[in-house]
Structure formats: C-alpha cells, structure tokens
Image (cartoon, rainbow, N blue to C red; front, side):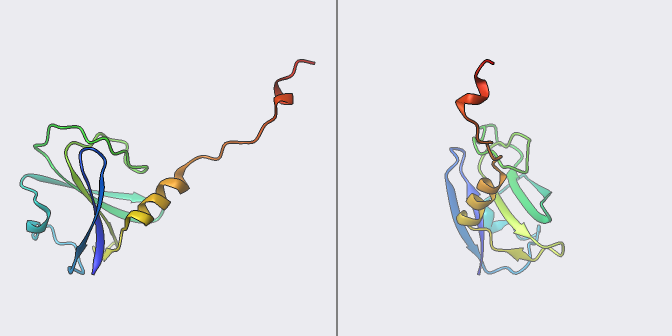
Length: 116
C-alpha cells in the first residue's frame, strides 16, 4: 500500500493509504472531492499532485515549500512518478522536505558589529 497526505484547513496532517498503484483522475471517490482541481507540481526532480475542491472558501493555513499559491479547504498531496505511479509520501518524508528547505543561518559573533 502507498501512503499519501491529507491536510486539514487548520494544518493538521493525516497519513492515508491506498491500494492503487497508479493515480487515476477518474477514480476520486476515495478523496471526498466533488468539484476538484488537480495541480501537478515539479520540485527538486520530484513530482507531486495536489488535489483540492474548487468551491472551497476557507483558507488553508498550510504552506508548501514548493507551491506559492493560496490553498483553500482541505487538500491531498501525492508524490508520483511521470507515469502517475504513486510513491509513498509520509509525514516524516514531508517534514524532512520542509527541514531541507530551510536556509542555513551563517554564524557570526558580536565582534562582527564592533566599531573600529
């Protein structure tokens, strides 16, 4: 079984499982979506699918490191191959993705700010 993520409006993360080997837009009954959008995202040689309802009005507080647009309502995140084979996307993998995206803060000392 492959793992994918569901993000609530409040940013709560839930791991879900699927028996599907390939992502099929025609089989969305498991995702509780009525009028949905499916966004393909390429980031660091990885492909992701973001699924959300178009009709949602509530702002989702989640910020993805590879998607700079505002997301409304709960959404699903899949990691896929170019042929739409589903790869597991766990909470741990997502958190590692977030931490690897943080910029390193250079070290400095108070001497750097001293007047000569």
